Image (cartoon, rainbow over all chains, first blue to last red; front, side):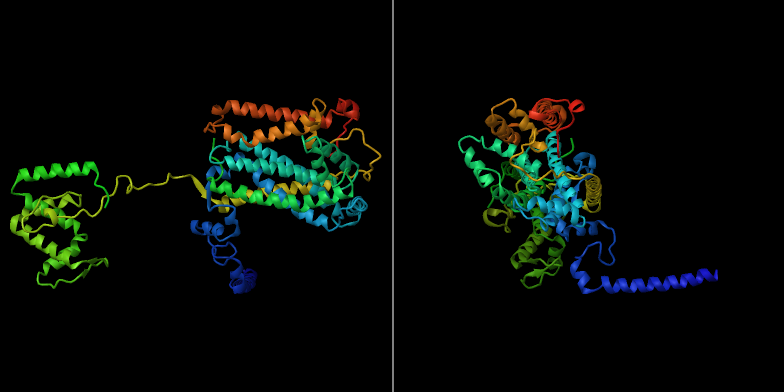
Length: 262
Length: 276
């Protein structure tokens, strides 16, 4: 009993100190300037409908989500999270891709060696490269499946027609992103897969050879092609994709949230 | 001023006719609506109780100002009503502020003998409460965000574990003089490469994918049906499914059933010629 009391006393003291520290930190001006009113990290956050609304309204997430969503929109069985996961894979690919950029030079002389070094000599290099590659394949798959999901739900119908068009553009951009990344390791797989692909594009009617020349940077695949596809892969295509994604997400909300249940 | 709707005019005419037929009661009946029009009935009552009050604007309890001339007029009406037939006036209060055009009242009437003004006519429908249909909604926080976080964590765990276990391919350095046999495009283009075995490259590599993308992108503009019930969309679903299946079969054949020279092979007999 005495022991328990003693422990209680120490416990009280500890919790009092913790409480004081908490008040000092979370009561500070700095803390409250970071977390806006309603944030779950603020002192005295209580779960109430009002605060649940504030969490979204006073957060950058308000650009993505409304305060309330239809109940069926929350069901995983309805969306399978495919659109959201495609977006997440895009973010994951950006993060891992930035990591890879630190160790890679897009020239025919050094590209393959850099990848090899990355795999063998860089901490987590192999893991991150693997993640980048598998996430890329997954993203092609998830964007494609997302399109199928939307089609089977008839979610492309008015007023969402235009968002479907943007979605098809995003699918194309995803394929292009994946394809441009395919060349970068500069191994036999990359070179010949891209050869097959660009040969096909060369058959574009009327300006086929011009298309091919612009894409390759010369008559044949080489260092110029590598640089060109690298810039496309890490800068131009992601930039365009981000813009289309912004419109895509914005339109989801403006068109009345995700489509109704079947 | 807004147009007076037909049915109101008709009702007013009928009422007027009825009132003139009744005769004696008319002045009292006509006085009643005036009270209602004078906005705040209790507020209007106060100045009436003090007949000697000077003609000034009066501020009511609710803060609204009642112009002096209206108060004056209300007072006169009240006096007239009390003098004429007090009982009838009390009974007619329930008539409320309908836009009735009252018959002329001797002594106390506005232009054209009207005893009340038409303040405004609100078109039917415009003041009806339009309530949005109640939707079954939930708060984004926590319901949606928790689902999203869960999905993201599961996917991240999957990708990390998969990446730790399975190596991304890195073949030997690119060599222009050594063409691998077979040379294959990335898996998502293998359907096109498969088409290449059947059609001219321009058809297989440009026309078919271009048309397919165009047709897909424009789907909402020629599919004019509005229902999203699967039963109402059998045709659309059938077409889409056939298209997707066809594509999947082509990709699978291109990936696993094509060997050296892009010839048809059985993967269980000749091995798999496929790199991701």
